[in-house]
Length: 329
Image (cartoon, rainbow, N blue to C red; front, side, top):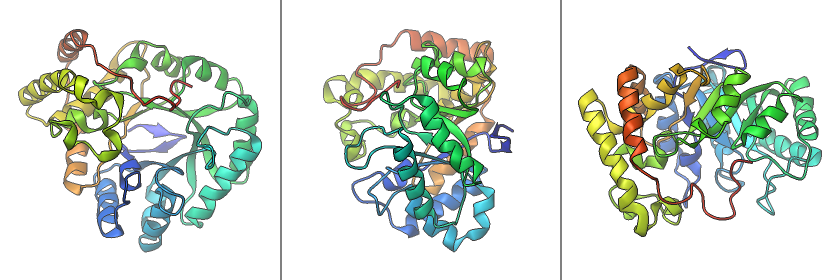
């Protein structure tokens, strides 16, 4: 089983964003069964964010209520939290004061129910030296309030610099059949060089690789304005989904399971991180269980090569994020 910061976790983690990052956060009688289902399925690495929802309804407030009801689950979960985003400007703030504000707020919202096992700045702050940012997080590690430092949505140069100043326990970046960019831009290679586990967010391409999204209207409202889901490119990008569905049918699995299995199988390749942990998210227990079933989907080297050949035929249209959201920081 993979490990993060010397703690054993399941082969597939669970992304919390969809539970609260939505026009109307879901009620507890929907979110609690989802969290229970993830833990029951072995997805004990949970990935959340201070800004995944409004200040009074985000990952931390949800988890505080959940662990208040199920305190026995707190020790079973390895929790990674993204923060260090200025709540007023919505820009990265990696200053000592910004880190302290973010971590103090996260700890306040958790209310002692659960330790933060990994803390990540959601984006690198280009105005602050990394050593200042990491020194501020280290203060909380030294006090036993945080377990380790992770990186999120970073460029290769950031990883190469970061390891000079801190022990980096995880790098969280987007990776899927719909977004294989990190395999060729140096990010995955840097993680492999320093033996840093890679946490793959959006392994189902924000849902499009599930095969359940056929038109832009099927998307969650918060994603309909994103470049890759615009009407002028949507059908073009959907062609890749059709290929994924064909592969999945041959493997007797769902398209989402194939997509998740592919991210895991990348770790077998030379020059890639030996530990890749996909973190699909869902609000429905049945889908969570389906995603967890991807551990049983084995892709041979020949099948991986065949998928590579298919990917080479398609050019995904549109940027990953809307303008104004920092990427590859």
